[in-house]
Image 1 (cartoon, helix red, strand yellow):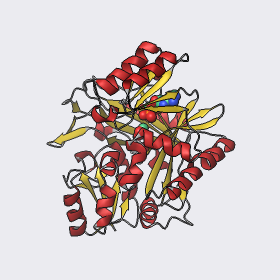
Image 2: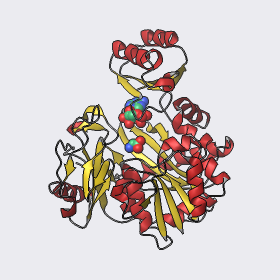
Image 3: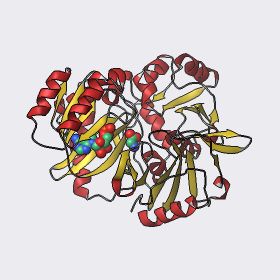
Image 4: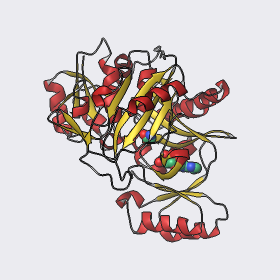
Length: 416
Ligand code: AMP
Ligand code: GLY
């Protein structure tokens, strides 16, 4: 079959790498795609939210499955539009995508379906939010903008002044526009974070190996939050915790989308805090994590194209997922100035010298005359497989020594 991957980042590059290995796949295309993944998936140049053109392309090239990578086209209704034109889609409906596009929607969904999460309250008015903050005695306090904010809409406030500033930034200065018209004030949770993803067709789910992202810019989880400086998979977890994640999060999620009649065929990502009182859900994403996908794909032994098609057709029941032994680590190479003001344009050297068991997924590069250049904050994700997390990390860091660009920065402790 022919598959169209919608998106152009490191996550889509990793999906293309895994899908390309499937005996079911004839040809892969990407919209818009990138030069970095062109060997695997032919870039079409079609914008990810140009639904008319995407649908036309699917018909012209006999695309049997469209895989939507990022949240933005999903929350604009990509899946509804394409499936309305007869294309099978891996990715939830616009209604389902509300679980990521609105934190209020997600929190109320969790509350309604008994999915453990932090205690919270929604505010539509900055005056009332300020009153609540003035009464609050316990810090840190977490304040979230309701809508999409490129991963920057969450503030962990250490004191009253920071909390009041968040209210002012989100609701009055509207630094994220309409996304700050409502805010959530919630309890701060303590524990280790994990990223849990599951394939889901609306009736059944299949849990994927658990991974962990490293969101802070600097070693030892210091510095500002980023889109993700690296990840590893699998996270070693007790059987008891895995069972709780399945029962209290994924099974209740499935029951919830059925009760609420949210059409959902794709992947659900639950960002969890493993607290003393069990796993609690911080957020839902309606797509694969980035950079988690870059280290998750190599851990899946089963044929992903077949599983994705089964999701899109509502035929996941009875399917199983086989995983690889060992572990995988992915280290993000970022541009100077990331996450604030990344510098673009530097020539990336040494990509052809990395060992064969290491993969470099392109997140933000451009190509000219056979050379790659920095074209985004997160530039590359260097992924290596090993017998365990520490040997995978060693291989990834050895490969990074062969890659170089002006201003290259990365964390030294991914998977440590
Ligand atoms: P989110 O965009 O919802 O994933 O939040 C970004 C990050 O903020 C999460 O990965 C957590 O590290 C942190 N965070 C969000 N909510 C909470 C919470 N209630 N307690 C502690 N940390 C949180
Ligand atoms: N790695 C976090 C995310 O994809 O949202």
